[in-house]
Amino acid sequence: MTSEIVRIIVGNIIHCSKQYEINTIEKGFIMVLGNKILAVDNELALEEVKSRLNLTDHETEKIVLKESQILIPGLIDTHIHAPQYPNCGLGYDKPLLEWLDIYTYKLEKRYRNQEFAKKVFNAVVRKTLDHGTTTACYFASLFENSSIALVDAAIKHGQRAFVGKINMTTLAPDDYIETPSESIKTTKKFIEDVKAKKNDLVQPIITPRFALSVDMDLMKELGKIAKEQDLHIQTHICENLDEIRLVKEKYNLLYAKVYDEANLLTSKTVLAHGIYLTEDELKLLAQRGTSVSHCPESNTCLKSGLCDVKKLIAAGVKVGLGTDVSGGPSPSIVSAMKAALDTSVHISFNKENYTPMTYADVFYLATLGGAEALALEDKTGNFEAGKDFDALIIDMDIENSSVDYLLGCKPDEILQKFIYFGDDRNVLNVFVAGKRVK
Ligand SMILES: O=c1[nH]c(=O)c2nc[nH]c2[nH]1
Ligand SMILES: [Zn+2]
Image 1 (tube, helix red, strand yellow):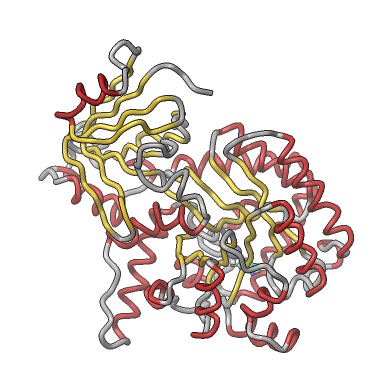
Image 2 (cartoon, helix red, strand yellow):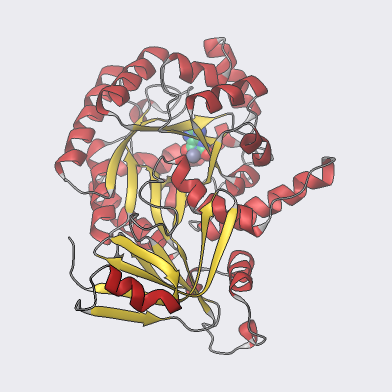
């Protein structure tokens, strides 16, 4: 895949070089060869770096950013249900378990039809890329063939993705579940089929829907497959009080202990929501290196609750952001950043000695934090030399000197405006592993 053209982007660059630390390089440059970042530095060092890396004779493509533009790392959605996209914005008069029964399973059943699956999944991948999601961790379908259609869409459009065929054997309509043995068989086939694509960006992920959709034996089998094949795992946890009560009734264990008993809590596991995790459960997740996907828009729309992610982070749990489409109504991680800020402010109204999160905190969660949550920090999340070049060019002057940008902004202020006020129109270009995909 390596092209010999060196791409150099010159302008204002913002990323998190460390946890919760924003690094702004004013008048900087980033140098990219093929999929990899070669160097990031101040523009004054450009010629010296080129000759040190023996690149003076290479063909180069130089992109010079305008003052209204910044270069930031690609955004990471750690939890999104691709098949639910047609339901975005629907059904928020119901809480989680009723919403699943009345709206969600009814839609998800339709993915037995592969043509329908192809149409929706291509649209979802295109839409999320356009909003700046360079990495997505997807729940795909119960159906193996349709789940492969999502893999194909990610490959076609050039998105980095984890794709999971859902395991679900109970608590859904009879015509929308598998038997445990079918579930294992189709999961193994799915993993094989994804691996056969030999695509560096797209990986299978083990995906038991949640503890109420499966039983302990099946979860243990899935834990075994994940271990044998060194795969990531995703599921839901502690989202809703009725859900937690039913899990306690079914397993007579704390929610996190259910997954731990099945060996599903690993350093490559991401659990969506985690609103009501107890101190003991947080300790367990921190010990296992398991992360939580914070899904603030879904938590609000399904009235699940306010997730205090600062508490999770303080307990040593890795956290990323998720849209949780269609529990959340928006496919945009920018919306998720804004909702995470809103949630944090709302928590501060009722909690003493609590400082709400800042734009810098949610920027971290959406980039390096997301990469760490998906155990991908060696590949993506910021602009360290040696990582893949996953990046966005953001422009807050798209209306060309309209009042939106009338007064001009410093690079940090452009980032603030983008988080609080921006949308896909402000995402000018998207790069995944060095390839321009928008
Ligand atoms: O937000 C959610 N969306 C879902 O599809 C789901 N399934 C189980 N639990 C869930 N929570
Ligand atoms: Zn979900």
